[in-house]
Image (tube, rainbow, N blue to C red; front, side, top):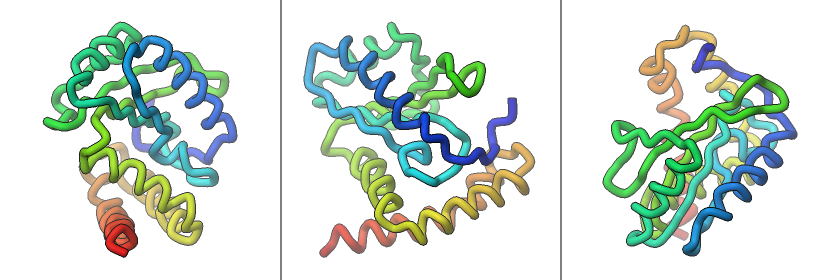
Length: 173
């Protein structure tokens, strides 16, 4: 299975997220904000088709949330985690594909990661011209990178920096 691909946006994405959010939240015995982020959270934006989920809990609930997610068959990936964000991956059954990849970014509301994940999604949702530009870069990167993750990320870096600069600029106002 090729990891670095460009698939069109599917109208199923919001429902897949909602179903997984409902499954996760019923196992949490503490408050949590669960948001759909990444390309599948932006209508019209294509990408790899991964359902990215950002979860914010209070910092002292991070370990408990981590344990709950692992019991739900999410694999904790320490090498992709940071001191403020735990990263998980799962492959779940899917109506369009045999299985779909899900990523969870578990953090707490005060972190830079949480603010960036939500801000990036919201910016693309409200700036269709930038969303289209980003889609074109992603499509080109998937074609040219030939499954080389470093090259794929390097090709996306300029547009990511541009979008993050816009986000920081609009937050400063």
